[in-house]
Image 1 (cartoon, helix red, strand yellow):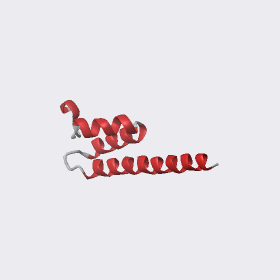
Image 2 (cartoon, rainbow, N blue to C red):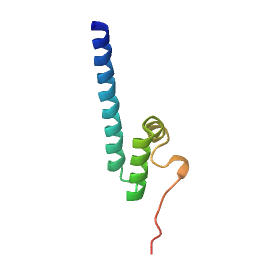
Image 3 (tube, rainbow, N blue to C red):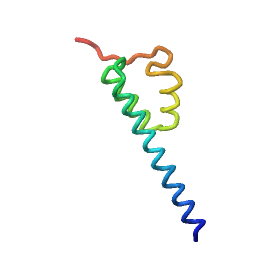
Image 4 (cartoon, rainbow, N blue to C red):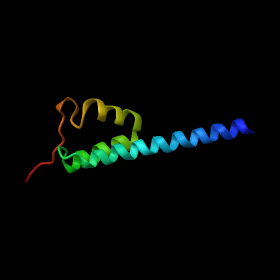
Length: 75
């Protein structure tokens, strides 16, 4: 019984850490001034839907990977 409890505690600690990292990445995205509002939301959705890949791309390539920019038509 102690072995199962130990694994459950470990799983809970890992899950809390995982969620903390996702929240931290999303908060950094919204605090980045070089992104416009649409880009912030696209990044946030990408990190929430694809947490591992989205976070790795954000930290490895930055907010504009390969120079890609998203903008709305200014009318």
